[in-house]
Length: 198
Image 1 (cartoon, rainbow, N blue to C red):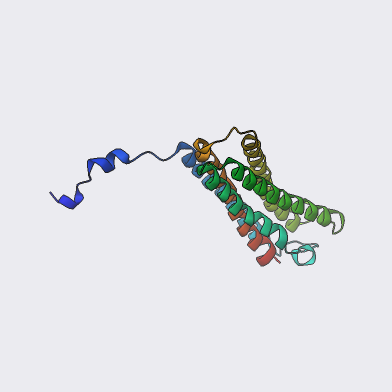
Image 2: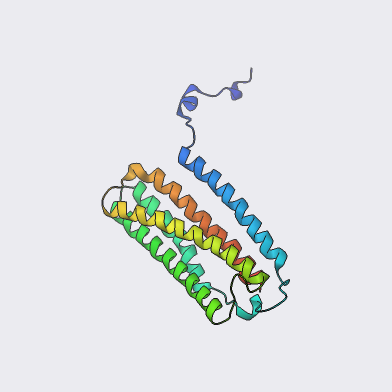
């Protein structure tokens, strides 16, 4: 028998099952990614097929500032997890607050964009194929941002009340995975809707 193939007993004992929270979140992310893929494909399929205006080129502007805010929130939530892991609860609260603020700015920016599109440009979900696919895809993402902000706000509340410690790092890490997913999806939505679609 090959000696290199024998695993020391100490390594076998140290091995643990992955966290149920991380496995569960990974499964949720895979399912959500499939849903987003369907919406992205539908958007790409219907680009340029609207029989009436307005078109994406006529009304869409690049949401650069809000995109920077949302993508920066991935860093701040990572720093919150790292701070909690080190036992720096007040620093964790600070970074969670920054994450909620950045996500909130993104959401307000999306709302302002929609208000502008509906009331100035006359683009609603029933206007044409572009309106239907745009509001469906961007709205699906905005819904995920709202859910993420709600959960992050709860985590911030627990942190501010001193009800989080380094023992809760795993839970906050699971939540941060969801938020990273929301940010990663925005990169795809931004490229498809605002770059390729224009």
